[in-house]
Image (cartoon, rainbow, N blue to C red; front, top):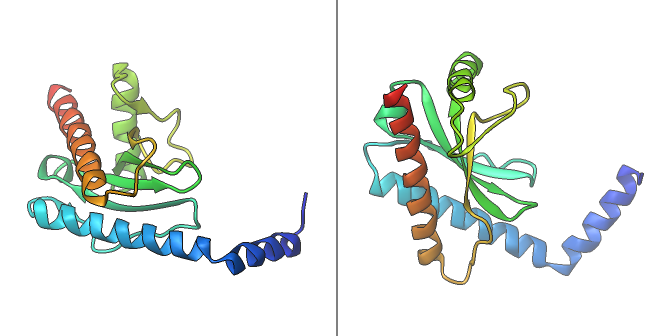
Length: 164
């Protein structure tokens, strides 16, 4: 295994090329615009005021329609850096809420979306890939694609909760 020193040297070499900073900045600006889009288009949803930038592993913001908020649940719109994809994660306001709803989804046998195998160390209960291979050439089209898939995910989760 390489040492931290070796990793930092490679990090510096990559940064000196300049593409990483441009890509990262562009991604963060797009995610900020996406969060703003949801906040403006869905004023009845609680949209987080900030973005979690992560450690270049994931970046996300949360939103919660009333039906989820009333249950202390939220949906995170997550960008997975290594996989370069957008996902939606159903999450609880705290570990107790997370465990309660994870058990409900797991025991129901619901398989419309991926129910995480365990809540230990997990930030989510249920996950869905929104966009597998995002095309950043047309950001308006990408936003619509993410929005459409996220709305379907939230609607499906809400319908499940009403039935259970």
